[in-house]
Length: 55
Image (cartoon, rainbow, N blue to C red):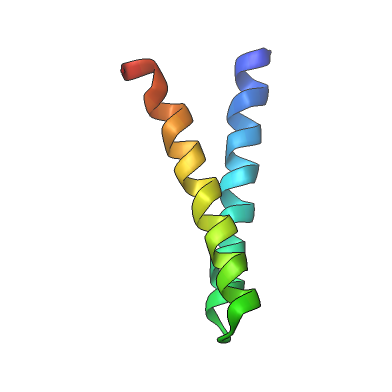
């Protein structure tokens, strides 16, 4: 049960971060750059949490 919840949570976070990057890329400016950086940080965090068990 806990494993399924974590997988679902990671998928939702991935979709949100990807949407932030896509929305931020449509226009230019400092605010949009911040949105893209938040999305990128989220994706890197997900990648770290996946690879943490292999270190």
